[in-house]
Length: 86
Image (cartoon, rainbow, N blue to C red):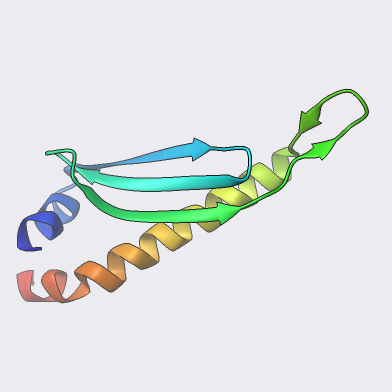
């Protein structure tokens, strides 16, 4: 856990976002590609008469929610390691 916290604290982690048909998923990975934290937001498409689609507002709100859950996961898992590093 010490090394994973070091990846995050040093900015050596990456965040990916995936817009799925029923969920927006976020994942933070370390430089060794290990999963450090995740977040998810459920959403639903709507039919506009011709296409199944999502509103831009729903997409933006969903990304914010998924990222907030990822950040909460980072804090819940690594907070003690961050405190120990200070």
